[in-house]
Length: 110
Length: 118
Image 1 (tube, rainbow over the protein chains, first blue to last red):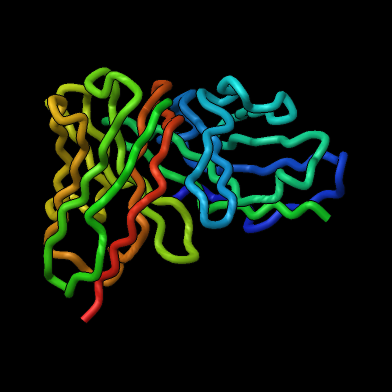
Image 2: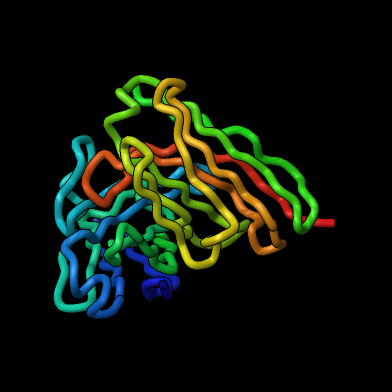
């Protein structure tokens, strides 16, 4: 159950787009369409932003989108806003009712 | 409104035990799979355990397998995590979370801090 690999940081100016990758293996990301993305502000609980690769829970702005190709999933935040500055984590189902999170990416709005 | 409130954290010596609780309200607790996720200070999220709606199936991360036990009391709307043989690297904020979508947790508590130190 090794953590999924994410870049430590990403940044963009307000209004720009930023994409965060989440690389796993053929046993996790590549094998299941159960990739989720979470946003976490400092000192707060995580918030679900994307589930099942590209679905948004109600209330999540459509500026947030997800995709997957092979063993790599991606979260794209379009039209960056100041409140998007946070840590982002991906998660994947790995079979047998187990899960793994990514290493996390800190997004900075310049 | 969905609410999850963890309790039971604190300071414990290495090798000791602790039981965390997560009180659920605002939804039909018995209808949802539940999870524990932890986060060491300044570190990332780590999945710990998952339990089926009726408690009949559980799964654990390799790092806690054999030491931690997840359980639930649907009559009391409460999720538990029994932690034994605690180690320094178990120090973390422990969150309970509801699996509102398959394989995704859409409601989280605020967490309870467990510190393992002599």
